[in-house]
Length: 619
Image (cartoon, rainbow, N blue to C red; front, side, top):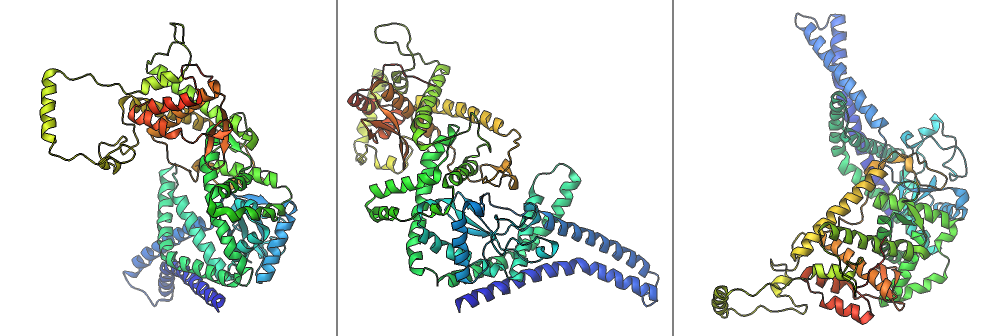
């Protein structure tokens, strides 16, 4: 009953969208119809008189102009390339078991099988229509297409809606078991049934064409004439798109309802468990990208096994979180990535695509953009990141004229030391006020005794400061409170911005990369908009300064106390002391840069045996 109700709602809304298209066509043809009536009436003598000739000429001119505009809008809607998600295509010969599972699932649901399968570096799955001619030449009948979607793409076949492409989130394949993946894909695959209806397919093509036309009209153009023509066409497309918006949304909601109801008969009990894994995979994927992959991308390295890293991250989460104790027992079952013939190659392709989407990296590997394995991550990424940041920090200090600390037993300036950074950021105690100012201070203090003291919180700040008052250690824009910290943070931000601008200029050079076998669909989306999904906003000055001071401390610990760089699957780069992760460094660094108090950091260094006066090795 629910299936029929959802399908009926989707078809009725699709007809509403098509009626809007028909009305727009009728409006465009109305002046031409009036002109034809006037011309025929004049030729037959039924409409004749002194003023009818002028009326016929004006109406005919208006009709010709409206028809030309309508043809232009129709061509723009038909020829504009609809948006397509960047994905990694999966050929059938590289994943025969996966294709077989999807076909069996479609057969159980009694719906057409998807025409192909693709992977996306995201925790989501959907169906995508890629039958538009702008998406590339029609695919011949081959193993790349599933049965039912690979017949000869002649002009007659183009009029028959082809099955959409099934896009699967790559983290699902590595974290989920085979049964869980089938349960998650059941409502998605069930959507191919309503998609095959001619009215729904036509309505979707019309809406996607309008959306693409609006995007083309909004893009910057060179000539004023082209800009004016596209502006008129875009205005008409926006009006039509606004009229279709509600009906299109209700149509998609009806399709989703019908698909969900149809999928109720397939692995319903397992779907409840699988949905829990979807949320867990999303949390692990987000943590892996922001804490582990992003530092590597910034260093010109892209981890080549991101999907395998999701399993390691979620396994580590299950070890730390008592709420996830039952998840490790699933690792003994067959993972969904076993459905791929070469999971390593697919993982590498999706990892490169993730780097491009979320960071904007180049399409090809090179000396400044190379893959890195997880075993090499501590040395290739963590060590280089810390030493690069420390070198940048000392270059900025040199530019500010901060003198280098002399080596013990000598009077000449030594190499880059941690003492130099700490001495510069340490707040100087102001001199005592003169006698006259001291008396005025005593008077002010005596008048303030009637006011009760502010309540102090556990971290040493007043309640007003803890609530974000004007006396807090950090202002609203993330600038450190001390004058030296604020100055150093500003100069660091400027230096890092110049370096990133130089890297961006090099990456903007024309690339001749092509989409090879198993690679992402690079030719079907615009590289100029990269990154499409930035992971984090730009770092504030306080965050940059904290990262650089932390890097300097870690370099000193590695060079003088035998510490080692490490990788934490949930927190990213970490410092290993005697094989254990050091997690108490951050608050001590913040105390130095925000309050100018080096005592907590010096106590931490002394406990670990770190020699702050010794020079460190930089990049």
